[in-house]
Image (cartoon, rainbow, N blue to C red; front, top):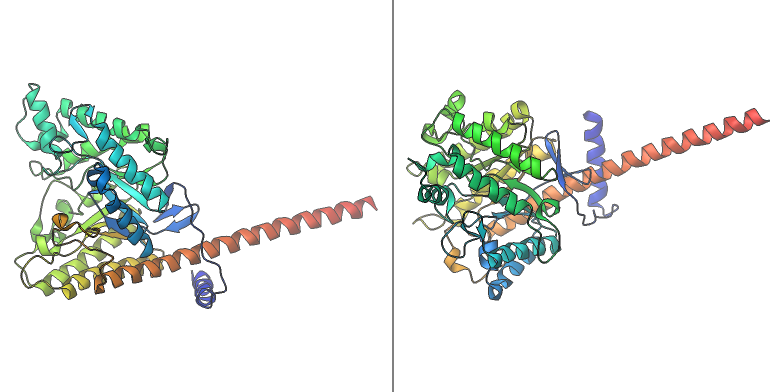
Length: 431
């Protein structure tokens, strides 16, 4: 490790003097290798944003300039990945208007978002259903089943009712096997998609033991991977622990998930964490919220590294500016806490592989502003922090690329030497 540390330092010095050329833009499927995400053999850092609205907005062709603007600004600021919804169940502008019935116009909106992400070099995480009522979610699925005569008691029956599970499996299959109307590539074969997400923030409060969700994840992960062996898969967890480490959760939350057990399922490729101390500890002081966040982030990095031995992505974090007295400086401290922990881990080859802030908006999207929205074209201290983290992680990735090229060069040189010696020996024997 010391030897690599010296090499890494020397490469950083060389890079700072402009001797090395930048890493070229590249495509390919993101994979995992130990604690790291890897793209084309080099560690990849998922520094990006949430934009749940991509498909919804793109369904209206007259509004597609919002997607273009968002992606252009994201690329300009070094962001390389977006997390968005691949669901809209029932309601207005549905993707799935009823079980198995899909709206082609909405699907074409998702096609457009994927196509434009590809053009801008932005990877995607696509979530397949919501835990909440927004855009249908679990409630819409159980309502559909109830309307077909199923005896359903609560929304938590989503995880156990055979009819509901069939509805969801069909949605997985429909989305994964969709052929993009703009690119001609099936979603399951599209390298622009980095990963699938089973559900946005799954919870099952009727079974705090976690067994219900554990069984559902196991079943659905296996089914999804039977269709698509190209892409990574994550659950969509907030990071709440089970009974064994309940004291780590804010206010000892128990929501039927278990960060450790859920992420140990073989089909799950990397772990996710969400971080909202302003929501979870709304009655606490700001300083207590920051202290909680620092512990929350570091605990999960250590557990991903030492127990799960898988990469970890901070898939949602932020702070609302809507509440009275909330300031940009307070939001900046939240971003700094998360970004600093990610960078520190990444620099040491640890499990943290990136963070996605909630949420990115384009200009003219005031109706989508929930207090957390960041508009990159509006210069702010938060935007500066985002750009700084981009540069730091890009620099690490470039260094790994140089190390890989050096190793390849050394191997090639050894092969050439071996061939030279072999040729000379043959000549000597011939003489």
